[in-house]
Length: 229
Image (tube, rainbow, N blue to C red; front, side):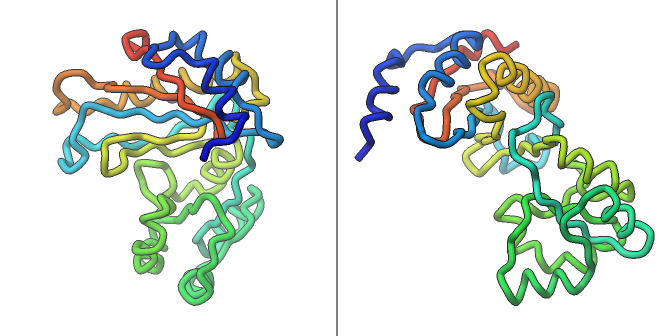
């Protein structure tokens, strides 16, 4: 059962209409009626088949205006790299001790995981638990690196990772309702630009099949994909 606020918001959106990006963000801010600052999310269905390795779409980008949320960062590193991670502001830094904590205590008080390449053997066995949550460090996302300080700083600045799910859809936060239409549009343009740039050579036909913007509690607003390049 949908609440009154959702129903009221739904009335503002024309069924089946594809909105220009300029209209979308004024509308999504108007339909964010919850008592908390709602997250605005982008859902893009791509014309690729993620089952094929040459049609994967994955990467990371620092949004120009951040996400409105400060990421809690966990870094797997030792020696100097561990000290660099702490100095850069990582909340948790460790080695096998943290692997054990995650395995034994089902501990997930973090939003981003970064690791130096030499730690991947140690944390490899976490793949089964971190993978499904999209938290496993990955070189493509810049989260497997020797430059841990840079990776921590980017995570704190609002770096997000985009990747296809099993149904070939990318789901990403692009900010908070309080950002207002202009900043949300800037973040949206940056993310869509990165996804278009990451188009696999093997992708045929229409690349962006559909694009929907929605707030946490609000209805989805369909974006006119023809305007996205």
